[in-house]
Length: 193
Image (tube, rainbow, N blue to C red; front, side, top):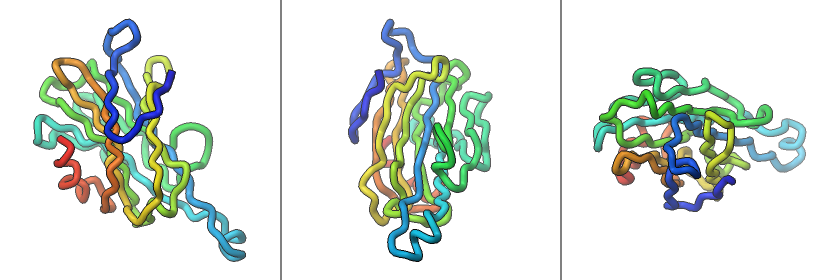
């Protein structure tokens, strides 16, 4: 059963029998907000290019980043599905990042997931945005966090997965930020490490 996460909520990434999950997928989905007025209705929604990234940390040091221009990370432990430049173009997640914990280097203790608008569109121009964590072995959704609230920000620090006493946990962050790339978000991410 999926959990609807609230900002700051933390959940364990262990199966109901307490064995750890080995493969998870962080999915991102969104749609462009419907334009208003006659011209807006004639033109339809604008294409919105949101980009999901995973920033891997060892303590407070960035080890690697997996995003649309670097699709596979350390030892193949983290993989990006590829760039979706319009969002909402079909069923399922628009972008996804998979994590194979069995291949994760021991030094990596945190993975922070971000989303940013490469073209500068604000979250006020986006609707139905979400991130969700899925058991990638079974396809079962474990948790979902709705990226709500609109606003003038162009990015959001979605969530982080942390290794605590050898076990992985997911924390919903949901902090609005500004920036066109993950590099722009590093100072804001630092507050959540």
